[in-house]
Image 1 (tube, rainbow, N blue to C red):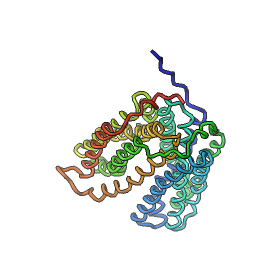
Image 2: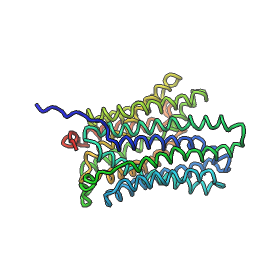
Image 3: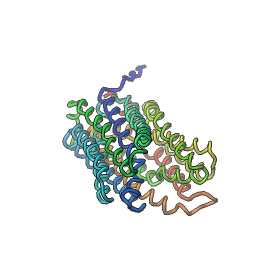
Image 4: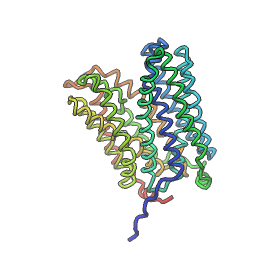
Length: 401
């Protein structure tokens, strides 16, 4: 009986990309909690304008995901796209401090998010090329763990700066100062990228003539797209929790979500390597359905913390497992095109998913907000469709390179 090959440690490039993600997200999350206040209070924009700025910014990420993935495979280059994307975001962040009106902020936020869309698919493709088949989940989980850890550090740094500068400057000036200082970790992260070395032999294997829309890929994409219609944002879970939690508990519940998300990102990847991405993804869909049902009908402090923690586990799987499956079914080593198409399509569908949730929020059935029940039903159907119609790529699951 042939022994299973041992897993090796993560590659140097994967570790560098993880550290870059940590620094970049620390920079971003120094800004994000303050951005709504800056836009509405300092710049005088309405909540509708705030939604327009953020909605369009996230749409730009999904569109650029698809474009950068295809171009990265076409030119057989990853690193230039990664450096340019991270560099664009880092260079744009200090411009937030000089915005004098919401149209200027609209442009700056759009450019900053555009950088995210340019960089993240080629970055994931580098990880896919670097790691052995049995390390894929672990590698993607490691990067996401570092990303989430940075997302936890960012608000802490912002809080420290608010305490330090808060008594000596007006609020608007305080926001602008923090936006300027946020560029420091982002710039260090960009500098680290120049140490990343692409594997030329792996890039040479990319078959530009290969069609990404294979039968396996198209079935998976259809199921994932259908599930995206259920995936309303975390803001709706926070809104529901605010009905029975005091204000002071809301940040604690959100911290539970982020902390569990961070802790479980790498274990979720390792478990994906062990049992396969299809089973893990079906588990995630069903977990999301259960959380939606529980959120709809239950309340209480302890229950809220448990449910936000379960949401963190769900997100840890969703940000790791799909990439493993996509790498396994991508023909001709066209990893970037496969990942970019998936992220672009599912990302675009999150927009109507949140619009529908918002439109139906005040409709209740048996005392439960209708969006939770609809999301739960779609998630269960998606899990069933995944198990029945999506093939498990056994041949590629055990590949070693």
